[in-house]
Image 1 (tube, rainbow, N blue to C red):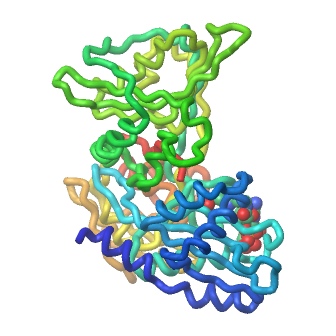
Image 2: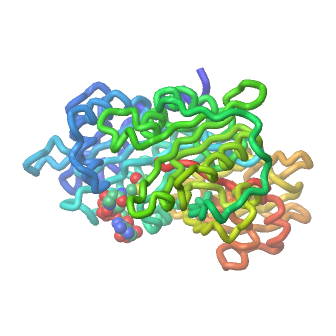
Image 3: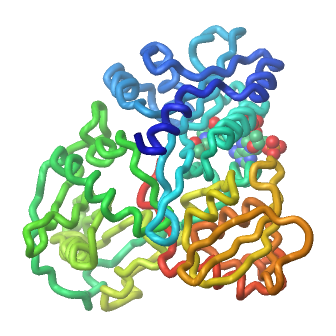
Length: 442
Ligand SMILES: CC(=O)SCCNC(=O)CCNC(=O)[C@H](O)C(C)(C)COP(=O)(O)OP(=O)(O)OC[C@H]1O[C@@H](n2cnc3c(N)ncnc32)[C@H](O)[C@@H]1OP(=O)(O)O
């Protein structure tokens, strides 16, 4: 069995954290892990999550789908026995074990977190904090090196040591103005059913995601969500699916997009890329060429792109694109040696690293020794710095922000967020030529 699968089982079976349980018990609340076979508990939990994210009540068919697709998710509920609906959780939390791509076509095991909600009737009493701290303890105890999440509000998770580690670029392109400098596609395009798209996409994503630090192995339930093939999907027929087949006859690119018709002027209709995956530059250029030549479309929009998107260099007029950048994938280092040894580095050097962590998981002092091949080894350090070592002192948030190479340590030093005797030497080690990204939300 792969390590991720073993960890997944241990993670699913782990008891709730004792400290979290005790603190919520003191407030008259009960923290529980949902049994995977309890349909009623699953339905109530899904309703609470829907309410927390301002969604409508789940239909029976949606609840059934949530139950069937919960799979490898560990789901927590906080229950208030004194309320009129004690079976409906007032707090929810989900997590699972995934693989996070890190610099060097490598990956690290991650505890991905989602569905954190607390009912309006019970908010600001420390329920979210108890769940988060407890689940970070559980992940750390199991030996998971990092935790990850995407956020509804950017101010929520820094207090637990998370930092934005991969930004997202969101594009609006004036399609007619953009022009094209790239190669002309030589392969073929075909519309395919959404079901076929959902069947082809997982393998293609698995082939390419390791090359992009910040990507996370896709939760299985996401494919039907993208393709809107799950029960109760919003406007399923609005999504168009296209495959690109290269000259060798291999499907190397897939895209899903929606269109918004403009009744006042059809030629000003809009298109929104829902998700695009391309295995290599030929498929990448081909799919963007296809999208930039959609008839009747004035503006093309695409989100969760890289901040260094090759598309910028394929279009002839860069001012045809308006690009905004937002924080997107948050990372929290839990185990410093395991996390740092999982990635590769750009320059050989020796770093004397001191990390502070209010929650304790990443607290300590280590030497990171990077060899000429970019491989780092990490050892605890006490006493004097090794001869010639670059000294870096930083908090767990700053370490997590720089972990995927998304921000330079020189930038963090200039912003007063880290202390070092040689910001540029430290930055050269942690830098990576491919900026991190995450192509979806979870
Ligand atoms: C990974 C994800 O799932 S992201 C999705 C997060 N969930 C949502 O956005 C759904 C709507 N919001 C909610 O359900 C709740 O308001 C939550 C989950 C964000 C917070 O739950 P609560 O139980 O009220 O939080 P709790 O009382 O434990 O507060 C913990 C800390 O967060 C702070 N906090 C809580 N809500 C917010 C907020 N909206 N903005 C900034 N800080 C906040 C509190 O002040 C507290 O700070 P402190 O402990 O450092 O003093």
